[in-house]
Length: 173
Image (tube, rainbow, N blue to C red; front, side):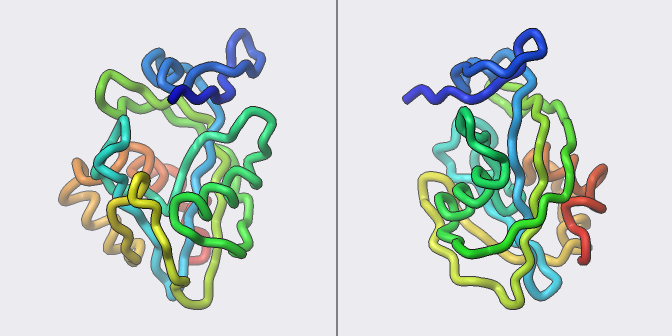
């Protein structure tokens, strides 16, 4: 099933098929969410059925906004869809841009709104198995060490966020 997402063409946002956007490496909006509890970050392993980066570990969740959807509404929607998380207050932490090959001839060139959610204790999760293979909570220092030892197990964007934007993504940890 094709899905249109916003993409910048001639400095204007226009709808375009998501797979075509990634095949062509076109710049497009995205959101990434980081949920933390007890000094640990919730990360997810992408489902094996994903069209790129299947089975790799990523931040709590990420996606593309629908046409006309605000980044904040998109982030809230996706937390519920992917992980069954509702009611988490999200703080907008900034906007970053990255470009990375993600396999299968695809390139992510994203302008990403980063969101951070804090929980007192790890909430109950209800992951969608078509999106998420596994989840775990990990301390940022342990995550950095694991990425250093086994970078191939992690999505390119998570590696970028932690190496270049940890001050935004993991504030307060």
